[in-house]
Image 1 (cartoon, rainbow, N blue to C red):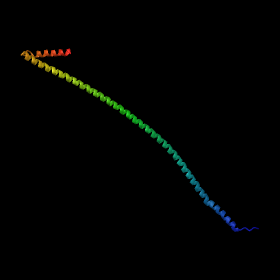
Image 2: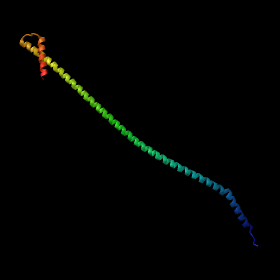
Image 3: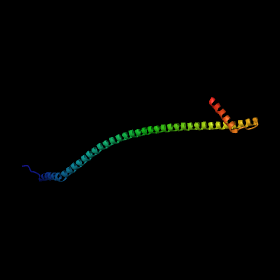
Length: 161
């Protein structure tokens, strides 16, 4: 018979026992740790993907809000310009009306002053004419009658114009 070397048998037996012990106490815990790490990493990847999608959505909302804000600001500026132009036109119209009114009042005042000056000049002219006539005649018959006569004469001159 063949002689079996018991040393080889014990070496193989020790290797198998060592392999079983390593598998139970080393490989299984390492596989569990690796599975937990894989689950953790996959969860982080899923979370990062979710956050990335949310960020993209928020970015789109922000861009839309920014676009709307720009449009709204342009509208506000445009409205303000229109209101300012309307107010400017109103102020200019009011100033023109006031200037025309002031000019008209000044013209009326000038005409009234001119009329007053003409009346004063006529009165003075009448007084001078009466004084000259009384000197020419040498005596003053009736100053009141002479004045009335001169006023009637001047009134007749004005109506003939």
